[in-house]
Length: 258
Image (cartoon, rainbow, N blue to C red):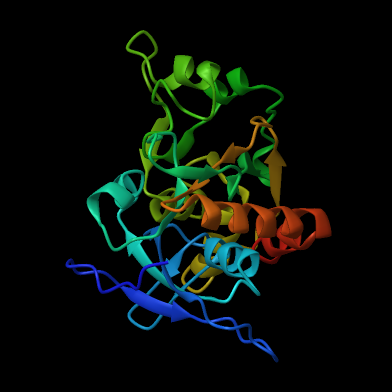
């Protein structure tokens, strides 16, 4: 694998090396792009890049001999990151756009969207259509035609024929804050993201109320990882499969659901 240099843009960079008792011979460095500002999947600051997707990638490549360096990019740039930035080797956590010259590994990470209400609200949510009986807040773009929440959700909130009374789309921070402040009855959110913001917001507001999870969206929303090099993609795919078969993959998720 070619050596890498810094991207000629202002990026936050953190080096994450495997700390092994007997490290394998170093094969080189991999520059991996992740989507910015999506805790707990990716958490970045001036000192480091961490989070669930960092954990998954690092552990899937453990023992491979590569030094892993992560950068974060705005999520809308991630799908075409390997085209736009020649120094990158991998783009992980991408969506649905695919390029024939790249090599993809399926099911890198996933989102498990749920509806959350406070037990005190006594919300009755057996199916998606029941949401119209409550005030609802979701993430930005959730009601678009290609929403992972499904066509019933789009029909409720994403068409001109159905006014969005009692429905809002906000940033992940703001939607969770509204829920805990009692300004909406239901929040539509990924389970891990909900847990993350519940802990974060507990420093400034009361997040102790008992909640109920409504599994209205059983289908997981998976992301992929894109590689320039086919052999490297195979190495990662094998490591990822080992993580899943051993149960370690789900253990990593569970750490972020507490």
